[in-house]
Length: 144
Image 1 (cartoon, rainbow, N blue to C red):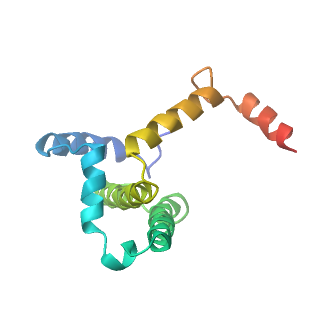
Image 2: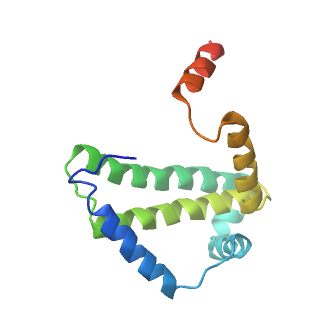
Image 3: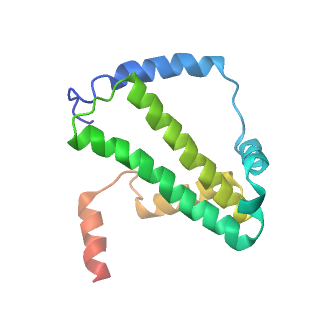
């Protein structure tokens, strides 16, 4: 479990409020979300396969960078992880998710398939069901 610091102590409050907010909103399936993403994409970004890949990759990198910038400010610049910052981070993750779904559409694969393959890969990598630093270091040395 992670250590609670002044920067992260507000996270529990944020989580509780987020749970309350979630109860009010209707859920959307992964399949429907992918359809929603297609409906919002600009004509220019979908004109060719290369444009779709570019939009996916560059958009994903940009939005992940925005999330990382907030994390950097929390860790190294004294920004508190309060409700407002938490909400900004959630919104940035939503933008990341949009580009992940756009990339999935570009590759003509369902988000559920991506999730299932990731679970399969990680289950094989961590057969005990959890990360082992010892196993990680052994695998890293074997790469050399």
